[in-house]
Image (cartoon, rainbow, N blue to C red; front, side, top):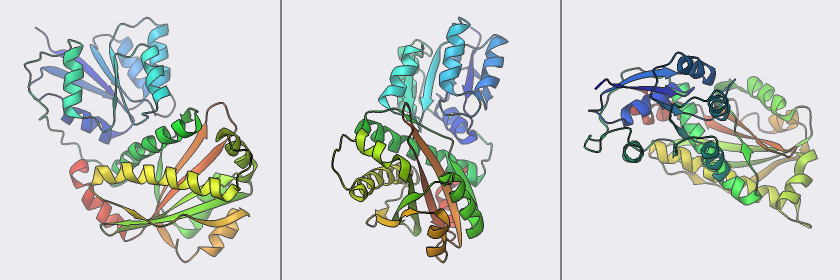
Length: 327
C-alpha cells in the first residue's frame, strides 16, 4: 500500500515543526509543507495530496480562503484545520466550508491521532508521536507563534464577551529602540487621539508591560457592544484591558512554563497623542522586545492595539524557555 501524502500549510515554521513532531512515529506518510495558502493550493492542484493540515491566520491568503477555493474547485482532499483562532465562530465557519475537524494550537498529539483514526486516515494500531524535526527555528519566529496562540485565546474570550467575531492579525515581533517604538505606536494610532491602558507583569525573571491602545472615536461603539448605556469610559476600558491582557499572557505562559503575576491596569493617557505617551514613559521603554497585535471586530468600525513590551533583559530568559521549540 503506497504511503499517504500529507501537506502541512502554515506560515509559521515552528507550527509546521510542531505538527510534524505530533504525528505518529510509525505512520508511513510522505510529508510536504507550504508556508502560504496560495502555495498550498498550487501544490493541491498538481494532485497526489491525500490530506491537508491547514492553518487559518496567514498573510495573502488565509485558511478560510483556501477552504473556499477548495470548495469552489470541487477538491475532494480532506482538510483538518489546526489553528490558534479558537473562536466558536471560527470553528463553525471552517466546518461549514467542509473541513473534517478543527484542532487548536499547539496541537495535542493524542487528539491529533484520535482525529486521524476517527476519519480512517490512519490505522488505530499506530503508536503515538515520536517524529523528529531538525530544522532550527529563529527566536523571533518561534516567539511570534507562541504569541499567536496567546492572541487566539484572548480573541476567543473577547468574542464571547462582545458577541462578535474578532479578526486576527499576524503578530509583529521586533526589538525596538524608543524612537522606533514611537513610530510603531504612531502607526497604530493612525493619527487619532487615543487612550492607553498599561499593565505590568513578571514571572521567572521575565518582565514587561502590556499596553492596550484604544481609539477615542471608537470608545462609544465599544460601550454599545457591551450593552452599557451609562458606564464610565475608564472603568469599561480597564475591565476590557484586564480581560484581554490576562488571557493573552496566560496563553503565552502556558507554552513556556511560566506563571505571570500582573499588576493593576493603569491609564497612561486619556485622549492624548502617542507622542505624549512616549514622552512620559521614555525611560521605561528605552529598548524593548515589542509584540504588536492589532485586533478588529468584524462588522464594526472598532480597532484596538495590544503591545507586549518585554524588558531587554527578558530576551535571554525567553530564548532559554523556547530552546526545545526552536531546536
